[in-house]
Image (cartoon, rainbow over all chains, first blue to last red; front, side, top):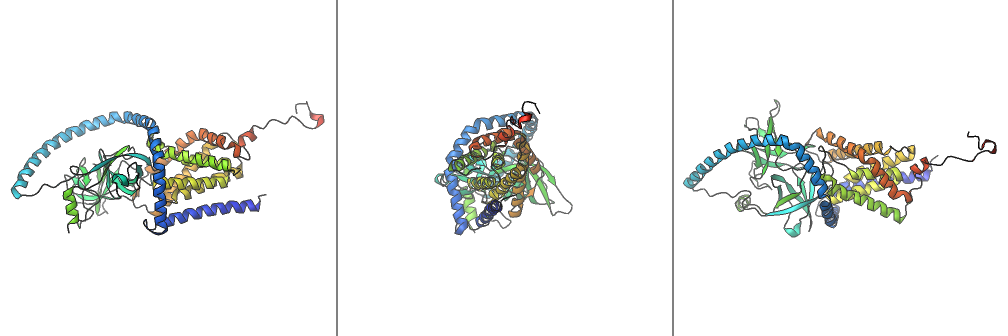
Length: 299
Length: 190
């Protein structure tokens, strides 16, 4: 026989905790600057700042183990990657020769019509290197914490890259840390362009597939070459509004294209250049290229 | 489980250590694309040893800390881990499991519950992207890894909380045989 008092207490505790979680969940979706939602965001930032030194220390302590696990995986993948890279080098050599010829022609044509050279990524961008100190354990929230914050010039909405390509953007920042939402997060959407085909679309993730992004909203008729590079387009819509990401940040490489009969657009799959599941060091782009900034600000 | 300040401190340190090890250590160690989920495992271990109320309270605290530390939507992890902790605790109270291998199925079910719970809440909130079937593969791998480490983790948690436990199932299982009985039956080996 159960004691009624114990049963009531147990149910009350469960109800209170579930209720509290639901209240937190609802309030958090409110304004991040004012009211209860603002208070919760402030508490969260405080907690992140307090935990940052501990997370940073733990990251250093675990580095040998994560490196060992990474090395094992890399060795297993190396053989297949070697053959793939040889093919890619051959293709890129061919592309480089073509690009150099095109560049010479373009320079001559630019001189003829008097067009100014447009600054683009990564020439005039102020970059800050930071270390990843924590990341979410579920695939539903693709975000990482980095050990640089507002004291280092990091601001919300600044783009973040890894050596190989786009990683995501800063979504919140404290004095010492910042949260970077990755392009594999379910809420992410990046306007992009296929080079050299010129097709525009929006790069979106597929939850659970960090190595396979989708380039959506590409016209069915547009040709997309397998192996072509996808970069940020620098505009967020057809109206020419400025994007958070400067033009020309490499995102990934086209792996395949799907053309469904009933769909208006074709869906292009791409493999991201940055290894988004094993990020150690990232760079925050603290300013946009001068020419790009001028273009965004002008009406 | 007794709720002395010493027990609360031990539980808090245990949950905090598990969280830091998870988000700064195990998150980078990927095996076949999957990884261990220590937070869900520790919550399940505490709930199995302590019962439903300590399980729910630990789950709520661990989830809240996780959401605070990672800048996620507050309340999501705490809601799911509260229910996982309560569920495992109720199982322990109702079935009173004493088998030495019980941590393995408990770890598998708790990990699956946590993964599915987060998925359901995420869908209800704001998932706009398409979802790959590989999500389930990752979930299965996490369940497998958690099952592999369940016995040492549960043993460690039980050891740390032994002084606070009202009844230790392992101690009960090892109860010494009764050597006394009715006078007429003593020494007959019956």
